[in-house]
Length: 435
Image (cartoon, rainbow, N blue to C red; front, side, top):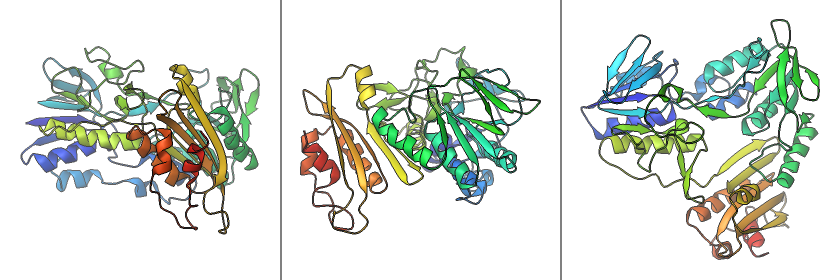
């Protein structure tokens, strides 16, 4: 049995390892358009800030390990440009391969609109190790960095550039930073940015760039902004354009639609990771939230399904977390904005409360918001921002959402208590009791 996997990172290699473990004589060919396998993309901003000393620290397993230890035919510089689903072949500029089973795990690429001047030197994205190494080299002698996009990647990049002494401006088209949070919650994020001398420009649309060979200004609908370097971080798009003429089914944004076994609508073809959809347990439908946690899980399950040991993907609830200077920003489930968009009847509660026992030294304030169904009391989402204790609580809420708990049931959870770690009533329990 020949297994061909397109993509050599999280989803692709998680699948490949499952095939190795479950089918002794499998022929596994992985095709990676770059030169680096299995690296931690989420760590890239921290290499820029110097917290992680080298991009090589982010590589989980190198190509030679896959080849020699695990018997995987791991190929580099092999970009697939077409797939013949009827005849079960994949092709590139210098190769063509047949497959018995195919996994598409091509990930996603940063979105860079065709703005005038976008071909000028000094305009970067951050998605791969080469991207990051080029950015670090280019930024070394530069003073002012402009980041387009105020989402997670933009915020992480902003913090790390500030840490190495750069002047940073963030341009965001929306009326707030971090649009996955409610606007009033996002105000705390903006305050933290400005406290660290980041210039935040909201409700502003980029129209292009100006400069002589190298970018010197960002042109928006409101101003011409002087800069030495630009990073575009406005989101990603699934790497599926090479499949556009196939009869695969796609999500509205181009992600490949898959079922819970990572199967597509075409026999013997699977997809996983940032190029595929994820089932959302609260929305009860496929969604697209590309994160490394999902890619690893989906890849693992795709590999098991390909060798005849199917186990269903249980879905996501939309959990994420980010460090931004002294704040931790955590969210899970649906925000009030998302609930309004899908016309859910909901109510919400918000509290400001200490993360540990109030009498114990070092207590920090948490802002906790819970959203719940107005009629059934089912928990629908949570947002927590604070300086300590966010990660503990957001994971409790994520677990509650996974198990479809009602908001009043949170009070009955047996959560760990000792003064250095919590009060007798956890902040999420105290918030739930406000209902």
